[in-house]
Amino acid sequence: MYQDLDRITLKSGEEVEAGVVQGPDLRWAPRVEGLLSHKGPQWRWGNEQVLRTTTGLDVSYYLLSRDGDPFANVMTTEHRGVGLLGHVYTRPEDRRQGAATQLLACLMEHFRQRGGQALWLGTGYDSPAYHIYRAHGFESIEPESGQMAYYTTSQEEFEAAFFAPGATAAEPAGWLHWPASTPLFAGAFPGVVRGAGLGLWGRRTTEGPFLPLLQDQSERNAGGLPPRALALVQQATRAVVGLAMWSDHPLWPDACLVDLYCHPDYWDRGGALLEALQIPDGQTHLAYCDAGLQPRADAMRAAGFRCSATLSGRVAADRRGSGRVDVEVWESHSG
Image (cartoon, helix red, strand yellow):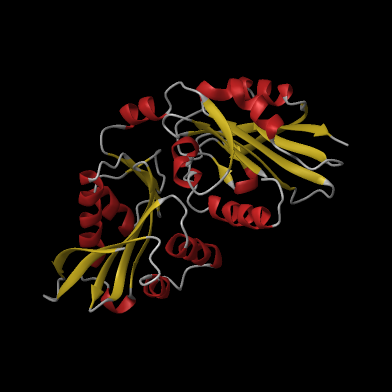
């Protein structure tokens, strides 16, 4: 569905149309896909899915157009007002006319009016884009990070409500968990090794890392295979409070790389989440964990893993590189 929002005047004096496409929309899909055709394969696949199929997400492409021909875009992907902001793009010939700044202002006002809670994005730290986002209320999630967050209330108020105690269930990782997992993985919680198989080291959004997983899950569903990732979901708020997954180990044959990460208040359910995951038999299962993160160690032990080695100072503690973290290797054998 396309909605006309406003008329915007560029620096050149030209007046253009601001509108929003809410997926799925088969009429606008080719135009939006064409505008964003420079994106990599995983991003093009993601755009195609949310523009042409029903995912359950609230997906909005905010566009500036001339006679129905879009030349600038900003996208939000949300579930219950918790989302990701991305695909900020203006055609080269239309840049330096204030298109992105005005389109972003329109988007943020619309987000607040419809009860949005929080948004995350990733950009280059201290870049021109970084300062545009800051002007619209986004802030780095940690010092010197281009991973940024915006809260309509405050981070403290949002997290207290979103991660509130409650009943949970393990669900195959899917589209609804894409935005809902970012508050967990970008949060200021213990643990640097959060999702090695997804490239999730330290605090960052799941915007890019989750897309290959979703594509793989789609292919596994089509082939009748069990999911290789399970999300632990707080049933009232729909917050992702834990994630367990396996992938082929990038180094060792006949080995699986196993990941488990949980919110601090939900580690007591991590062992059961990992046990519910159908990891291939007949292989060595390897997991990497921050040394000294006792709740995670307890969960790994409960799922049948044992610590076999410690890698000294393996990863940086934060974006600033203010320290190094020892990483433990945990393993189990099946079959």
